[in-house]
Image 1 (cartoon, helix red, strand yellow):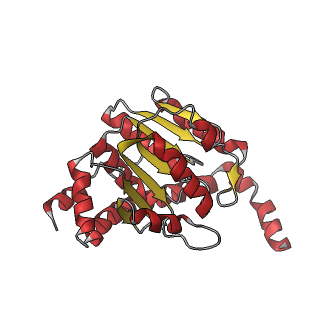
Image 2 (tube, rainbow, N blue to C red):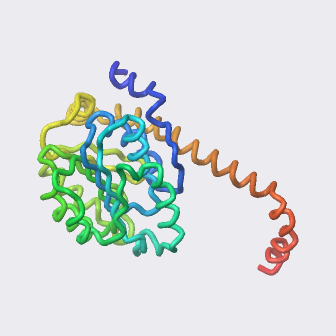
Length: 264
């Protein structure tokens, strides 16, 4: 294995996630931490935050590195036909998690179009993860592109999802013909779009590997790191379920659950 990739593979800091919530983004957490460490963005924006996993991975990283980054999470927190309808508890949980990052993190509870007024120009890192139809994600990409730093990076999630009316993969095919990119296939796919020059040596190294036709090398390294995050999430979930089942309230309500089971 290349020495630089070996260093990444052995970096125990990358998969060290602090804020676990259910998410299809779990496997990409180490790459996002690596990316933020390498590029040190001054402005980070996420369009489509839901319960906040990817956003708070970014915030955790910014805080740990002591970066002067301003972060913005944009979502109306009402849900959509792909993510489902959110109850008020989703937003309340995000607000609670955000308290420890509130000195640099801003939650904008509004539409993506309205948020353009509140977010400064010169965005260095933009993560688009809203409604996943082709028309919606294309509009997000095109309307936020003018607000980007000329050397900025845009992330697109779900580039390998092809069921229903998901259409990110269609936009991704168009983007790859216009920009230099790298992509990850795990966790529904993540596309990385480079608008200009690369902000860090490590990122340039990954792009060179991709363009040489050997992307499976960094895919494997970050895939293994992502598996650490996924396994930790499942372990925590199993532990939480075990604690619930050992609780007094769970034992007391056992006869009622058994009754419902017989009635099915």
